[in-house]
Image 1: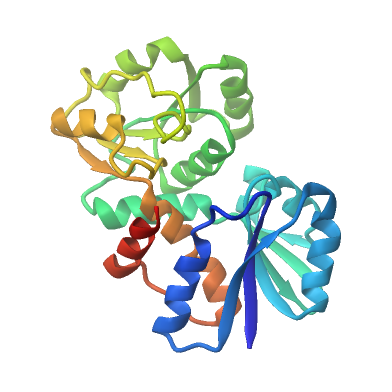
Image 2: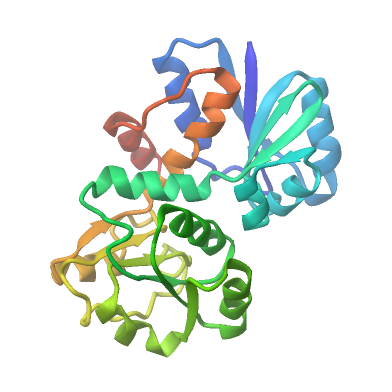
Length: 273
């Protein structure tokens, strides 16, 4: 039996076992995928135990994504660029690290809004945390001509702009809404607007109806940002699919089958929220 799992601290909230369990059942595979709680102090030794126990690999969530990169023997270019890993593959005692968040973001938008053209114009990205790093990397690789990056702490956005290069320009948080008039894509990479978090203060009044608006928040599924953008006539994409699509590469690496994100899987995860 092939064994995999997801590591975090805490980990009880993870929906990853629903995703991977669905694919294991669908493809009739002899495998398991479980939640594994490891504190930061236990992380390195815990990974070694999993390798010794014959695990094929793991997903990694907060607060371990940077530590996962640090202990890897081999690191993908995108994980290195992002500075964090969410997927580890164990082969011959070696640890291979990847970051699939950006791929999950792009594939979610392409599935839910197939008319989206990443190269049609600038993108406005809200936030400069870990998720922003993955999405910036993915947008640049996909061919966005320019990214306007805003964050409540401007210095964090400036650090990312320095890292990712000339296609990323920084604007003040207060200038986000005025800047949105000239963009083709808007992405909220923050947790603002999520259940239990502060609201996202962003006006959609300046949005062009041809602009695509997406949010990585998926609880609630329709955030205030998406609701207001839809009222402006914009196409919108919720954040649930990013969670689903980022799981695909790991499953393929561990279990040898590349799964598909379908509506049945989406509904199963929705039912668990």
